[in-house]
Length: 132
Image 1 (cartoon, rainbow, N blue to C red):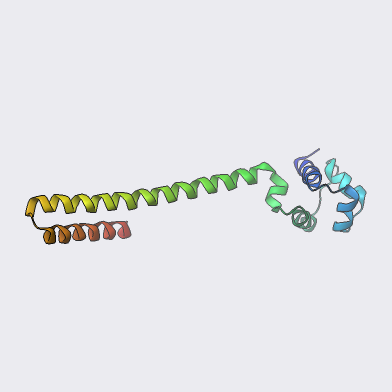
Image 2: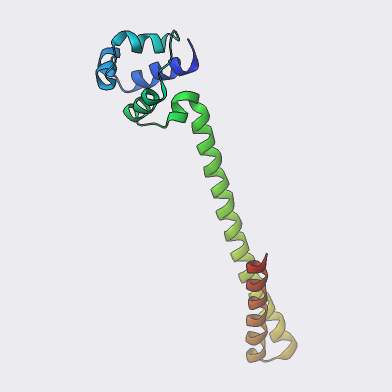
């Protein structure tokens, strides 16, 4: 039995559909479904698309099985890392501005100059982030 056949059988079983019911939905014979599942033949491209729609999955997942799910989890992990990095940059910029204000205040003993210096540093950080 080939992978596509195994996947068709698994997804059909997951949906509690008989071979006959699946055959009716796809307008093919029950024997055609049986042949796919046993690896004797393979469905054509249009039938693969119809099978994927019937099982509410992608054609890629129907063909490759778990590999499509693994790709989705990798994409989710990458997005999570990207969001975490953005939060880290935001927190770093905020801490940097606060530190600049505190250090400026201790140097000039003026809150006005400290805020001005802090905002100037913050503007530089924003410029640097946008540029690179």
